[in-house]
Length: 196
Image (cartoon, rainbow, N blue to C red):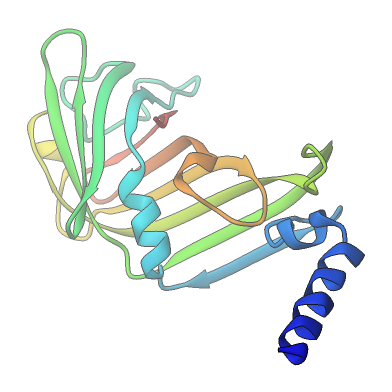
């Protein structure tokens, strides 16, 4: 009994000696933080990806627009978008305001790049610096329908970037924006938009 009391007292003293911030800061990042890695998405990351919902899409334009865009017919500048990771693919359903639509099916990638950095913009409510972060995915477009159908040929690829802010631990809620680039023999275009 005395040993149990002694152990309990030692544990209580240890908790009191260290500020609570030291235990709650497993996800904190220090000023100057930088991290980039390439790896297979783990189960936790795949779980977070399934929570991400695409909501809006704008076509990326340059002074050469619309001549620099190929693989979308007919072409609009903005779309509503419903998109989720379903099974082995992202299914992105685009609709313009004229009842024209198309679906891009992007094969779930086997690898990803995870990038986080301190942009030197200040602290995040006492929990370290707020980081800019990206998850980047590059792989094959499995199919396209409707407005995308004529632009999808064998070996067409996508490059998807999820963008956001947060601490050194990443969740779906950190990502607020996205960019998707499609390239191939018959396709060359990019979209950007918001995440839900």
